[in-house]
Amino acid sequence: MDNLRKCILMIASCLFFVMILEAQQIVTGRITDATDGTPIQGCHVFIANTTVGKISDANGNYSITVNGNGSFEIVVSHVGFDPYVHKIDTPQSFHQHNVALIIRELQEVVIIARKSYSQRDIDLFWSKVLGEKPSKNGIEVLNPEKVYYFLNSDQVLKVSCQEPIEIINHQMGYKISYVLHGFEHDYRNGESTFFGTPHFEELISKDSRQKNSWEKKRQEVYDVSITRFLRSLYKERIEEEGFLISTAAYLKNRQTVAVKDILQYEKDLAVVSIENPLLLLCYSQPISSRIIRNSFMDLIIGKEMPIVMSLLPQQIVIYSDGTYSGILQIQEIQGYILGLSSMLPVEFTGL
Image (cartoon, rainbow, N blue to C red; front, side):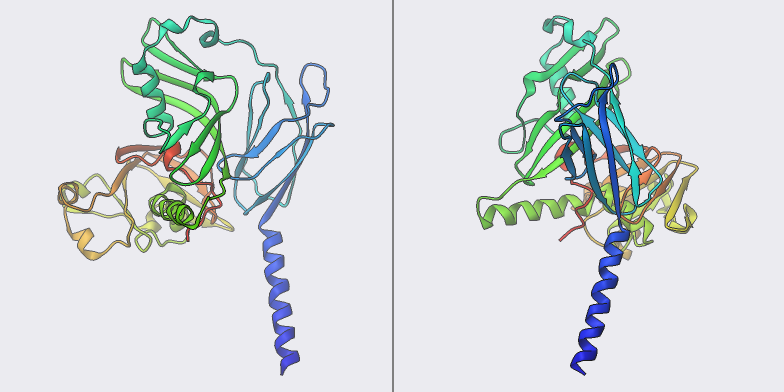
């Protein structure tokens, strides 16, 4: 009987190991100068929104192992070169991806005098990117002097940074290297467009109290995160995990939307198709019948304050690990969870 039990355990362990291997994707390649083809050493190569990253060797070579079977973005950053971003939408066990970096040219916002912007512009930029004002006890920016601002005559604010913005999230225990690819805000219509890719590094806690505080905050953020929503959507468990989708008519008649109406499975992925704008309400608790019965306005003025967003018409492909292919189009209505202060690495799955 003991031998049989050992045999079963060995088989189970082997199957588990195989499952781990199948859920990994290896990316290798060589990074060179696009001008003359020489290898570039010391490039920061990382997978966006994760803790996965490496430095290219003397021959410009790199190798990265990505856990999961979903899509991901590979980012290459080096001082003096334009940052490189490439999204891999087709999951497979091995990817060969070489990169030729382009020498960075001085941009308009770098050479224009600094007097062209004000504190209002600085505060607006950080509120959009971080989700809150920088502070030494909250989310701290280590190199703010590297960020360049320029407000042109058309009242369009442009912001750039020639190197990764280094950030410490003191509340969740992460160091974040944020590669800003572009930022614009038009004061005439209030619209902002920006794109950046973060890389996370987990900090070492000084004691158990700090560790517990970080874990508690991470869980709070994860409970209402977009990553958790996509995972629960893939599993068709959105209400069990604290999310509610409805039409705009929910304001009047509490009309909810069933997952099956927007989700269609194809092999190891699911296609999400949204034809008309939908409301996404994010709670930190399972959706009860009482929550569904209550009107939207009752929730607004009551104690339960959901984060509310609008899911715009779109079609994306989602995977079980919370990653997706395509452009996820979301507008925040109430609350703020899209800034770096409320972001976790994708591999975080809750406690």
